[in-house]
Length: 135
Image 1 (cartoon, rainbow, N blue to C red):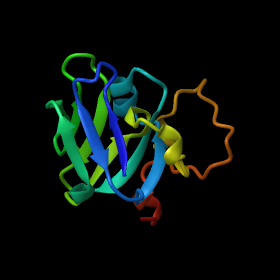
Image 2 (image 1 turned 90 degrees about the vertical axis):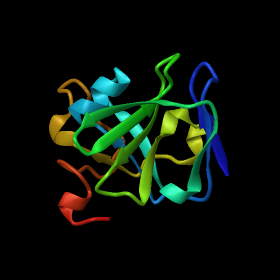
Image 3 (image 1 turned 135 degrees about the vertical axis):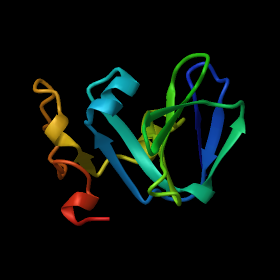
């Protein structure tokens, strides 16, 4: 089991088990949500995720996507896609131990900022892994 939460501690959560995948997203929406060039995430079965303290605020960043964040300090916490109701993406750096789930790939590199040059050797996907035939 891993625990995580926001910067100010108002929202806490836990996830159980290993992630289904772990990556770094470079899409424009993630960059805006994080105010950063990319946003690392780990995907878990939704039934293995639980809020243990507080109540995160939510924002619908696109018609089928809900992002949660702390309403006090603004820390991004989760990404929930209605087209994938059995999973939830947890923002890796909101975990107490972000090193527990290192990324294995990059997604949406077609929207990567030009000066954000990747040099880690991980596989890249122009859009999503699913678009490239991976799960």
